[in-house]
Length: 340
Image (tube, rainbow, N blue to C red; front, side):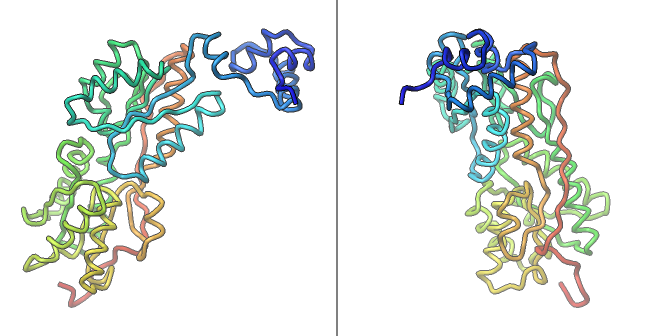
């Protein structure tokens, strides 16, 4: 069968080809009755716009780039899903570009990626969202962007802020409320602002209860499962292991739990563990992981909406503030008499 064209849609809907184009491109000021007629004709004819022709006609690629460096694949996948929840209904697609912030070729690679794909804009999750060199490059090239970060770093119109420090305080209050005083902290890489923000807030909250985390109980990890396993063994090798651990992401928290299982410990009676992000795996491991929930998919949606607002020349929007929430499950428990 011959593939339907925009002319076929216009004829069937009894409208002009220009009206069909305006409906496809979600342009404002199209009457609802016209939108309904065009969409009905598109569905009946199984019409699919030619992306190359659309791109050439409008001088846009309809592509958005996700430029990221994050060792947690689950985080990245959830971020992509949230972004696509908004982009696809708007007729746009996502192109992903993993990279390393410490690579000498970073700026050149990003510039080449933007120019090669002719991107309409980019979304930057942490830690790349924290790199001011990269932001300067995007401004220089005139590429619209949105930054996702744990604190406000830029104009409100381009920021989604996750307020990580509030979630870290909730984790501290939880462990203190369960009676733990021998508490360890497993951080992410020091180069990540999220690691610094979460770690500082957690320690400050414990200090308010006169609980100090000793040097041996404060360990840098890599935001990976493997680094969590290593950190867990280091802590459990101490003469007086902690009774509670806060890991600054779920991958490391689950790695710590694995280290405890390798030593035949009873979780959570022998060791309470709390993570951060509340990725889907938190509810699938056993015991189910107590974790600070960051709605990562929602963050991707918010970032996409902000970017589309820029592309549509809409009025600047306020900073989007994300409120983290502690989700309690089975990986932490109160100390009982005789415990440590």
